[in-house]
Length: 452
Image (cartoon, rainbow, N blue to C red; front, side, top):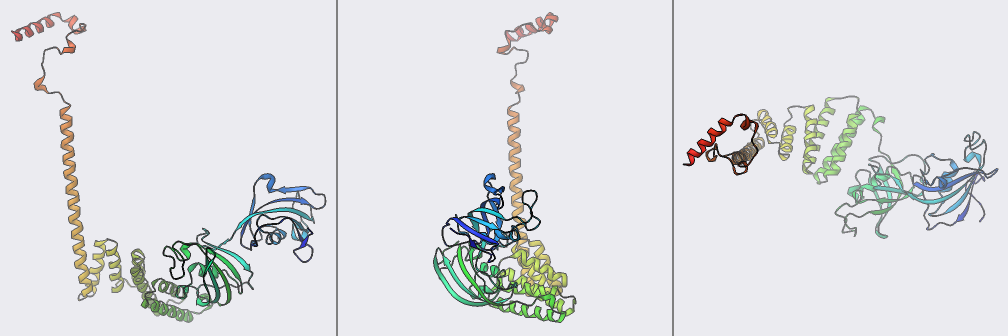
């Protein structure tokens, strides 16, 4: 098979020695694994070989970690393919070469064998729960940011079966409203305009433990999406705004969060509240209006977290609110509720009592105080029972141990003093007996006297 010009100027040419399998090839961002043997084109001298070391070479495509020719050539290879890659100096090590093995301006030949590849890992924890394979490269350098308005084509598959195919428009971060899984949202922040990519998404970023019965997706399913980003409009960056504009954006997202809260969409409401705080936190001017807006947002976050049974997070949000206003009744009351749910009855009682001090007629606080006192009393009664049972057990254990020790002591009332035990009747005279025969005789006489 003849050489194929990959660069268009003859600088990178590929000759296939063995055809690969399938139709897929790796894309930029993929981690590829291959064997290579490099030789100088001038004299055929080998300068490196992963095969000789028996160590396959792994690298990320399109990241500039290898010579240009490698990136270009490997992009065209199929699984199992073997090829020769001929690389002109400008696509290899150039005028400087790579001493001592590669001289300046050297044309190189690489024999490559594609062993496999993995998609680009876009997952937040780098655990390959979201993988991308670029099918069509996008335009430009800009990508959507959190909150950007996007228009996309989606094709969802599970085990080869298409379960959804549609065009959809939504703001990143609010995809749940449009039925878009979080894995697609996260991946879209790395897409360029008109890019088409295949995404492999694990359950935690797809339909989770419940699956989606309406779409026919079972629980804990890994799904595949083919996504095309047709258009997007980035959300304005907060650093480009002045203080008044940041405050306006903070109000806007706070209102959006409240609307989602009213619809019981608590997770999205939380995202909106966090975005609102983001605009307010970057404000250089900490006005009273901004301060009060932050206070309201933290109170709403606490309420959302309570609705989602995230009581530790609810408590933390109340703490933030109380840092702004340490006598805020709502913050004290909601923190008391969170502490009560966490079983910290005494601290919850403190918070509800603080509410009562500020608002003596607050019936809700009075009710919670009654509940807390009952909980504290019940807890104390239970602890008393536990300790009483422990002391009883310890007392029984001590008595049993004493009885066992006493049983091992000799009974002085039953000892036959002055008499030989059976195992002592026959024995060699001791030194005391040898030196004191009169004492021994007296002892024997007393023994006979008792036996009369």
